[in-house]
Image 1 (cartoon, rainbow, N blue to C red):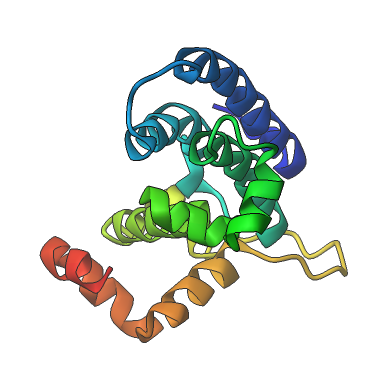
Image 2: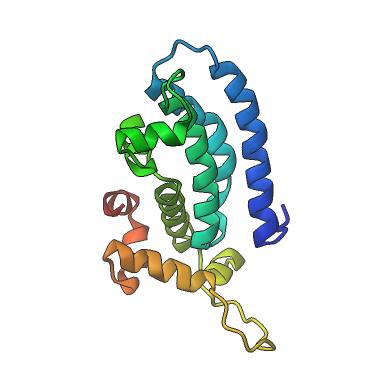
Length: 187
C-alpha cells in the first residue's frame, strides 16, 4: 500500500467509519440485543474499520481524539434510553461522561487499543534481522536528509515514549521482545 499523508489518512478512516456506522445503525434501530452486545457490534464493525493497520504509523493525540469523539457518538446512541430526550441531556441528567459511558458498556478507549497494537508491532519489528529495511526505518536507523530545520515527531520518539510509559528501559526492550511469552506478560 501507499501512505497518503497523516491528515488524509485520518479523513479516510473517519469516512470508512461513517459508512460502516450508517449500515450498523440501521440494523440496531429496533434490535432486542442488550446494550453491551450492541456496543460490541459497534466495536467489531465500526471501530475495527478505524483501527485497521493502525500500528504501522505513529499517531498524534488530536487524531486519536478526533476518532474517539466520532466513536463516542456511536456508543452514546446505544447507551441512551430511546424515549427520554437527546443523548447529551441524558448524559448530563445521569451525571455520566463519555469515559463512564464506555466503562458501563465494557469498551476500552481507542487510544489504549492503538497503543497496544503499536507495542505488539514494535515487538514484531525488534525480532526482525538488523538488515531489514522495516526495522531500520521504524527505529530511526535509516539515514534521512537533514534539509528541514523544523523538528517533527519521529517514529523513534513515539516508540520511546510508549516504552517509557510502560515503565521499561529502552535497552531491555529488544531482549524482552526476543521471548514472545515475556513480551505478552509485559503488556
